[in-house]
Length: 123
Image: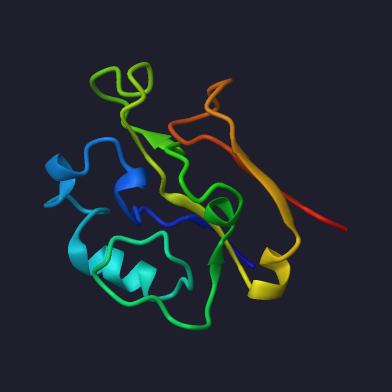
């Protein structure tokens, strides 16, 4: 399992302002292509064909269509307006992914500019 703040969004559901951020670091096409090239699922942006075998994005295993974020800028009241990015991930092997029960992002209480991501795995 690989966990952490990767600072890259994967697709439109992972960022509030997709169009306006296409030239910003963390949403650049080559960054998204690199990250999506590691992850074997259909929750990508179409820049690359996902690998047949690879890591699973634990949040997307549990919530493939969800529009939720793990980070908000400190500027412009972004958090209050929910103008965020999902840039924090738990990537896991297919075997571990098969045990995922749920995934939840906790935007409150505010600990930092990031929100905790909790993934529940079966025993």
